[in-house]
Image (tube, rainbow, N blue to C red; front, side, top):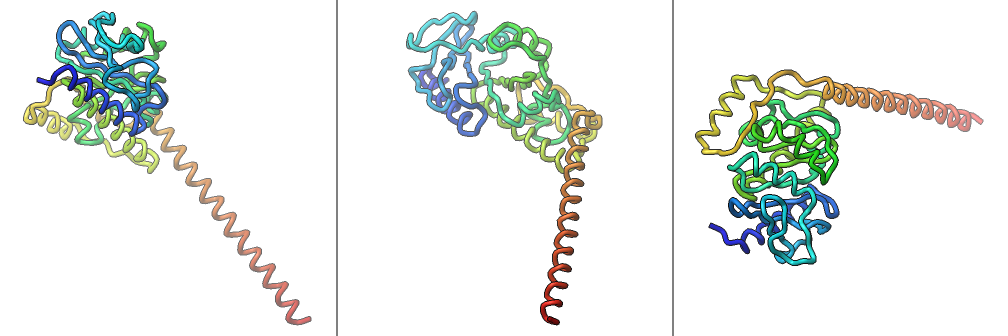
Length: 273
């Protein structure tokens, strides 16, 4: 079992990964690790995840009260989200909150990442729901997350970001990577004008692999229905943009031909003069 200091070192390392990959900007995001039934380690507020050091990590109880740590630093006010997860899910040992751009774009657009599109995503994170918007740093977000916590280890937060949780910090972080990677691919597929949704038979076969791979946690079964109107609107806009670009290119081609014709006539006149 890792020591408390080793866990602090891992928090610092994962913080650098999250910041380097652009999952957070400035001082955004927060992470916690549950040490035991009474204590958690939490990242400090107002500090970039790319510049944390071990002495900045704070120990709190499961009510968010500070137990120990450098008095210069305080835990994020958004630790309330983490505590709600720990209280609802005794199996969870770590929670990561970030704002990965592609996944957060879906949260802002109100489009859940709940379709069966990638085998890895179906197995690892399943259908990702969106919790209704709540004011950051208040109990609004934890309260609105509650209907989803017991059925999924990954939740999009409307107009806010994403929350992932797991059996340890690395497990929770990897789910954040999988979420953003999936959102990136789905977004690009929509731009290409087609997203193949896997049938329920294949989804069920993939979910059966979770037991074979000894995967823990909760995943909701992905949706095999066609894309919703929101995504169809995006694809329609992409097609419109392509048509507009083609019309522009056609116009430019006509203009170039006209210029060549005029130049040719001028040259003919010059030769005959």
